[in-house]
Image (tube, rainbow, N blue to C red):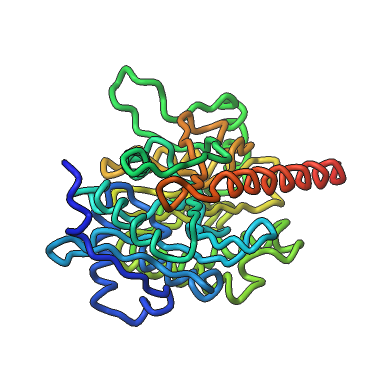
Amino acid sequence: MPTTARSAFRTEWRPLVGLAGDAALRTEWDALAERAVEPNVFYTPAVALACAPLYGHGVGAVLVRDAGGRLAGLFPLRASRTRWGVPIPVLIGWTHPFAPLGTPLVDPADPQGVVAATLDHLARKSATTLLLPYLADNGPVAVALGAVLIASGRRMAIFDRHARAELVRPASPDAGPAVVDPRRKEHARQRRRLAERGTLTFDLTAGEATVAALADFLDLEASGWKGTAGTAAIASPAQRALIETAVAGLAAEGHASIARLRLDGRTVAAGIVLASGGGTWFWKTAYDETLAKFSPGVLLALDLSDALLRDARITVVDSCAVAGHPMIDRLWADRRVLSDRLIALRPGGAGFTLAYRLEGLRRAAIATAKAARDRLRR
């Protein structure tokens, strides 16, 4: 559709904490999340508001309304007065360890109009630079953003382009398989050996059963290396509350499930699956590390893949994994390409060259520090 005149949109900035108590807005927000041109479960009210107590300090959102007053865009951002060690104000798309996707919610009627209105609104604030992390390269929001930047003369630079595994339903019988298991025979052998210890079953919960089954995931995570390191969610009341609140909120809408591989009724591997607006995310996974020689986490991923591919409503599943993940990358054939976008909010890009150079130096320093850490761990 042609881009609507920017004057047809109304924009406002609202603190994230202020959105929690607005019941009418939450209803609109839910509706926008369901019809968004590119869904993002981490920006639904159920997940975003669950994450706000731990990760939402200083976060706000640009709300965009169309000419009829309907909510047409929601862009969660954190305003920072400094970055790169210098006092340069910058706005950063809201992501954190529990939300690895930064795609804003945009109504499909006019994505370019919504994006243009948002950038114009932000250009009137003190910040001159916007950083949008974890944006899908070829997604409709990135396409709309690119068109708006060209039309408005704004500059942009791309950082950290990478690909993570995703499960894609084959478009036709002639298409390649969605799951490629190079160790298929070995995994079949491990499944047989594990089944010799008892009755091995797989289930994918729905509704109220999801909330009860979440305890299996939390217990498994705590029983492994994360529990030993003190980083399991169950060891942090704030993280546990985040996961439990997000899953309960989505489960009430039929948008969350727990996948479980069970041996004589005891859960030996579990995963959290989230959904929103036609999108699906394999959010978290854990397994019984005392059974590692049977690869229960891999067996769970294989069973879950089969179950998701049998669901006609599901076409794509985001693994939420890091690039090159040693397990899921070997199983799921397709990839989602993501990158971070550094954007000059004002045409002409005053100060953008400096911001670009500083961001490059910052990322190079982080990469060097990670490489040194990895060498020390060997």
